[in-house]
Length: 118
Length: 118
Length: 118
Length: 118
Image 1 (cartoon, helix red, strand yellow):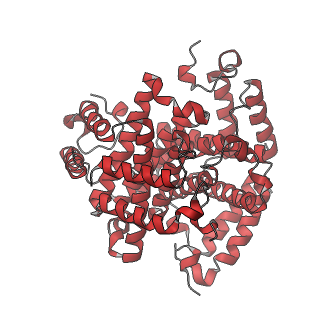
Image 2 (tube, helix red, strand yellow):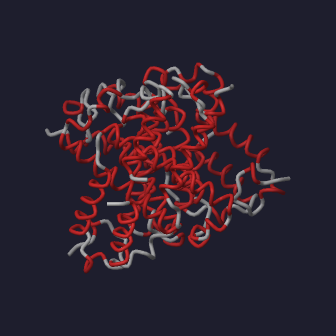
Image 3 (cartoon, one colour):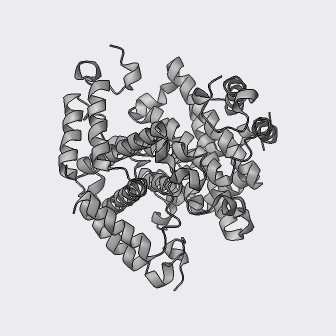
């Protein structure tokens, strides 16, 4: 299913329930952040190694999968009500990041681009 | 561009910079939540009406677009390292939500499904 | 009870349960953000006016109160393990904000200080 | 300085700038979550060990200190506009957590109380 098709599904889901009144960009940004927080909570006490193996536990793996879906749902819904083309926005962002994080400066370093020197 | 193609671009971007060492699920969930927080900050002082008009200001609109891209980037990257199919996860979640939020109970109400009675 | 006394209570609570191993600054910052997300979810579908009246509903009010406590708990615990004096940090921040947000420029405006001109 | 005194300072700071109009509980919960996200970003690429040593770098340490202050500022402001006694709320929460996380079940385990069995 394409991103547009998912957005049409989510829009129909909201419209059928008369939820468009709640789906202001402000509220959707809050819901997105709340779901990102729930995803975070699944990882907060795990070591890095445990986090890499999280899908090996079926119950925990299913929770992770559902929270990822929830974040995506609100992100696509927000982009839809704002009329932002998410694929284009991401393609543009990757291009911008190529300039901000040139390989020879960013290699093996997690610093923000403002701290990379160069 | 498909979701898989975007994920391949993001994976290549990380690999070229030797950033895979930083991209544990735990760290990516943190980065996702941090970007969701930056998106939130663009809306925090706006009225609901102002939030609906946010794209009319080119500068602010561009910021919103970039933060949406950042959230999507980390979400797709996280799903990739966990081998979660995000489209399938979202399709499944919508189906589950149809059962949790039947139209006759959820119509016009923003309550959580546990509070819908019925 | 003073902030230091609350921090001693929280430290004892963790020590009794052998939870100090989980309380790295990284993990505590995640837990703090997760609880802030739960607090956010209590407000996400409310109008500004409904949000101002949230404590009038005893059940919802109690949830808000508990989430505020959870955020404070992780914030104090984080400051404690990092040896940050939160009262001093906040006093210093207010002083810095007086300089960044002079009344004649910031009056009635929610802009970030970088956008205040002047 | 006591918590009440800090809250009076923060209230005066807002009142002097005519910012009370922006300080609805909904908006303050957003600002709190946004600041928690900024704090999170300071830790996102650090190993647990690096996160424990974060204050050893003066520049990074100062950033952490400021973000902790920002989170506390919005938390105290939110509690103030909602008339929640944060010290009492936290004391009550610790007492409730003693019951939810008895030492013999929770010792050395990071599980949520619903997963502790018993």
